[in-house]
Image (cartoon, rainbow, N blue to C red; front, side):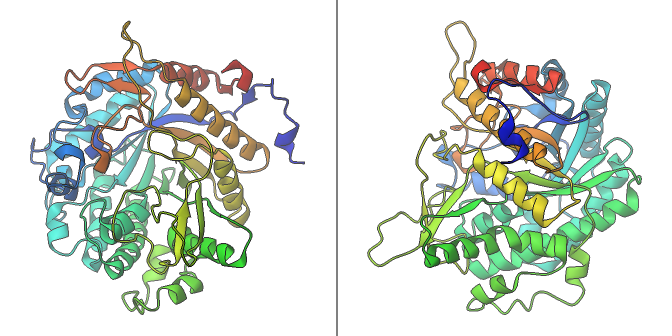
Length: 480
């Protein structure tokens, strides 16, 4: 029995002093102002304008107009009791071609945002890259090209110099797995390429870009600044206990998790990953010195978790869909794992079709705590989309989201009790927004947004989360 197992169901869960209670967003999903003040197109501007790529041609041109409404949005965060806010910088807003001098108006927006947050007692947490590569860099080759990693290191130095006096917590990349394998493998995300070798090259250069960015941040930031990365690590489970299904787990764990954890935290790619993908590439794009550049000390490891992944080996006559929850494509985002099938776990699902299973959060945290002792952890994204609608009284009641977040916070608390050093939780998302290839059809926000009027309405989950954030206590399940 673990320490957490002894807590009665009627007990509240008290989180440690100093635990961060935040919410997260991403630039392209909320800012809008796509052509203002020197901003140039990113790959998501181009992708969303490509027919058939995004639901009904939705774009982030206006999104939730955060660029013009950020002060109101910060006041809303303050009203909700948040003490941290995770946002990303639009690379092409501050460095339109991905190289060269900065656009001061772009930098000024993020300076003003950080100042507004600090004035309301909210700690800014800045993500350098949340998928919106400047289109100029993609035209030159994108993440499969080494030069993109080098430009990313320069971009990190530019932002550290401009915002290092205001921002104390920095994240290099958000979910590089999605950037590499959905962007260059299956093509369901920008830039929409479908080349497994390009995807593997992109993964390595994202790793390298991370390492170069960490070095640039360390050189420019005050010593007390925290530097991390956010990984959407997969909690992978076998369909059965058969050896072939256990091996399917190993394959997905290699290309989903250890392709990042190995270079970043231990300085090496896993041998089995290289073997699994040997039919595609000899990995000669990894140069001498790259792994040393990638393997940089981190102050935190950010974890994005939504749902577990269940896999098996594809068997003769198997009719199980090959979909893995990231969008339909004829091309796989899993190079080296063509003989792996993905299965829907039983039970409740969100509007994304993702299974609700907080045990995956607990198991993932305990795995990382065991494999990398001494490295603090942070939940940098967790949340759910549901079919939220305004009631006749103008309110939005979303009990499913409250139950989802409660269950996952309970898993976090259990992991802390059992020895995991988890420092904070960022709800995805602060507000409804542009949900990538799904456009505006999926609502993840604690705050409802009317996209016609831009009116913000906190949902019942926002009020519930505010009470948890202010008290640092998770109520007992029977009190939800």
